[in-house]
Every structure is written in C-alpha cells, then in structure tokens.
Image 1 (cartoon, one colour):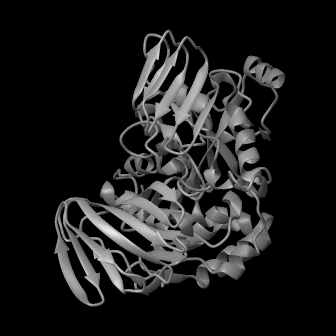
Image 2 (tube, rainbow, N blue to C red):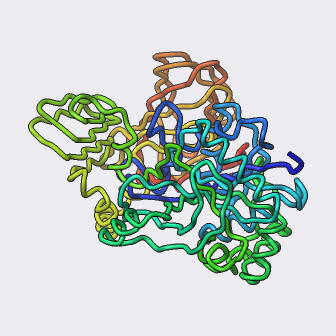
Length: 474
C-alpha cells in the first residue's frame, strides 16, 4: 500500500434521538450503548490496525475533553483533535480536516471518514471492503460504503448502483433521499439499492480538487480555517471567522451528488447508525421474550421491549413493544415501534423554559478532571458528589457568592485554601469560606470522591473565578 491511510472520525454531532441518555452535553457517541466502551472508543479501536496512521478527530469545543479522556482510557494515539468553532455539517468538517491531513501527511494521503456513533462489526467482509475502498480511492475515486439492505427502511438515504457485496467499487448511478414506506418496499423488491452508510474513503488530493470545483466557497473557507488555526493544549482550534463563512451543508449534497468520481463499495457486515431506540434494541442481546435490558431492571410478562436504567431499579409487567429509558433526572416511556417520535418529544421539552435544560445537560456533568453529580438542590444550598481522576486537579479558584464544605468519602484529597495545603483521607472534611482561594487535587492512584455542600445566595456554575487552570479555561 503506497499511500498512508488516515482515519478521520467525525465526533461533533449533538443527536437527541436517544434522549434522555443522549443529550447535547454528552451525546450518544460518548455513551457505552452496546458494551463497556463508548461508540467513539469502539471506532478508535477499529482503526487501531496496521493499515492506518493515528486518527484525526474533528469535534466541537464542548466535547474536547471527552475526546481526550476517552482516547486516553483505551490508549489510542491521535494525530490531531480539530475543534469546530461553529456547526457546519459534514462537508465543511471533512474539507477542513482534509486540509489539515494534507499539511501533516501529504496530498497523497487516503482519508477514511468514519462517524463516531455507528455500531459496526469489523469482520472479514468489513476489511475486504476497506481494502477495496482504499484501492479505489488511491486511483482518484471518491468512495462511499453502501450497506446491503435487509428490510424496507425509511430512516436512511439510498444509493443506486450495480455494486455487489464482495465486488470492487462501482460507479454511483444516483443518490436517493429517505423514502416513504411504500417506496422503500418498491426499492427493496427492485434491487440495486444500498443504504447510504455515511462512511467514506477519499483521496485527499481528489477530494479537495472536487471541493474546489464544486464548492469553491467551502474549499476556500476550509483552507483559511486551517491556516488560521491555533493550538490550545492538545487541541487545534480552527479559525472561527473563516469556518463560519462555509455553507451549512452535508458532503452528500456538496460533493457526492455532483461529482463524476463517486463510487460505492457494497457491504453486508453488521452495521447500524443507532439512530433510534428501536435500533439499539435490534442490535442488543435479546432474551427469550425478545427483550433487551441494561442496568437494574426486573421484567414480568414483558415481550419485544427495551428497558434501560442508569440509576433507579425499573420494574415492568404485562407490556409489549415498550421502550423505557430511565436516567437520574428524566424517564422516557413510549412504543418501541414508534421510537422515531422521541425527536418530537425533545422539541417540545426544548421549547419550554422549565424543561429545556433536560435536553442539554445531564445531572452528572463531566469535566477534564472528572465531574460531578447533583444530589439535592434547595433554597440557598446544593449538594453534589464530586469525582476527581487520579493525578488530576481542579483550577485554583474562588467564589463571590457561596461557601463550601467538602467531605471525603473515597480516596485522598489534597486541598489548598489561601496557600495552605491540607491532605484529607476518607471521612475527613474541610470548610471553604466565602471568597477563599482554593483548589482540589487527587494525588492518589484511585478516584477521589467527595460530598460538596454549597451554601450561599447564588450557586450557579458561572460563580467561578479561575486564577490558574491546567486545562486552559481562564
């Protein structure tokens, strides 16, 4: 193989069709939906293969520490983490990343574009398709992967082609929008249609040449955004003004539906975009009643259902075709066969001031040092559980409106208060008066957990004055 193959992982999506587990602050790609690791980590593990150079990630700024932490957890090396300053869909994300890859790997690089939120079984058929796509991309074709359809599906776009599973890349005859149910049945019966997977194999030189010809505004914006990029810790912030000039459009519309270079490799490996709860059910391990469960769940006379809990014990009896998704601050209950309607519910919640936060953040919030879970809120007080990873420390900070009490329940805490350092072990506590300059660190080898009781006139997260911070958040 003459050209270096660079995985490009798209990790910026804010999907809410898997609400209430997937939310804007921690979307589905960072959740362990199909096993002990997240979908993003599974994607990284799939490209830990001699075929590939280290991966390039493009995501938004809010997810930068999630990306870094989850990659570190599985020991995955990264060639770069690009941060999108504004959302601009897949065309601009791929174009900007391609410019970055050309800078670092040369114009002959082949780019394997992979969504970070798909569930894929990398069997022999998968790797055969990858090698066929690499060969086609090396000859100048822009290759997409088409999934051999197993049933009429209205949630995917389709590709018309004479490509066959196990065969070489073949020209794309046309792209088809997501069909209605009747048209999906017709296409399946007619044959020659593949599901559009959203995975691509692109020669960097060929893709950027077509971008310059078919989408010159985007091409110019992508180049300028990379040239004006700046490093921020382990991340690369793309230049905002240039990035924002690009049209908000998918790579299918901008390039693939217009280019004469489009080709498709037909595949039949197990694949799902996990775009709805019924897709999670189809990809899960079903019991004798065709139920998929996760967490603390008890079922009686239940069939064909999905029940997931990450907090409370959920008991269900006498039902079928039900989805129950329970988190510590929201529960969704609906027909599993109508799981696509979750998006409608999210829109209703987002439109109301008293429920909009449920679509954005979890009760558990993640930070580069660990995170915290909200336990109890009241008038002028708040109780949280803080968890700090080994070797990590919070910013040196102070608060104008609240005092805090910390009680260590697990591990060892190193606490700095107005320059004085105290080491606390389990069951020990410390008081942080209003206005003191303080810092919390975990010098130990295990997670530090402590209860934080906040008291004061204002308890918002924006009442933090950072004085020093190793994560660049001053």
